[in-house]
Length: 113
Length: 119
Image (cartoon, rainbow over all chains, first blue to last red; front, side, top):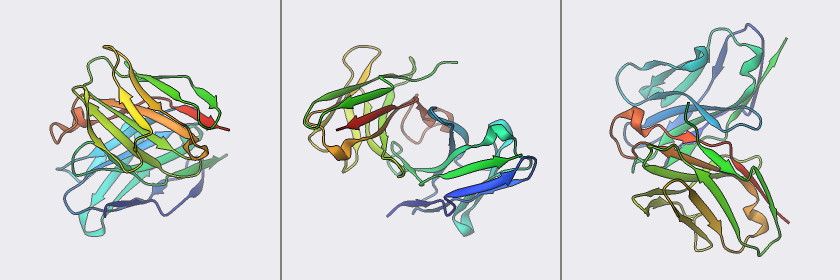
């Protein structure tokens, strides 16, 4: 069965520090992979996506993610975190039919001064 | 920039009542979706809709749920007889396409959600 795992429920980083949010997936074929961000009271905003090709993808707000097939991972990174990055981050996998997104449980990011 | 809108932002209803959650997808999008997020849990897929019919649904989407596109702009989720466990944030999303076409067209744009509280 397909699954998406975000091992870290909460992460706290200092402003200006680097960030890595982990995502592992279990899926038979080459998946569509997404990272979404949700700020309080807001909807889900797409940060970046991977379908094929270059395994390092760039997104909005200075985020990037790397697809590693051997590790079934799609970790999200940012070299220098800003206070405005505090939010909930969701990894998602496009399901086989191409319609449904299968989400992880999310990682809550807290940024300290 | 075009966006998905949802109304109301918060709905409180009594158990057993019917509720209709409304969404206005982005105007040139053809695929529409509902997801829900129970507090503290992950976002779960409910249903996708294309060409006036359901394309795919999850096991959560049972007979108490229905979807409709009553006119050219709205997309609604109806819950016929609400239960306490239906309390959740409900997200609407839309995309240009839904299949494995150009990835950009598969991107799902989400609305801000409707928080449904069943008492």
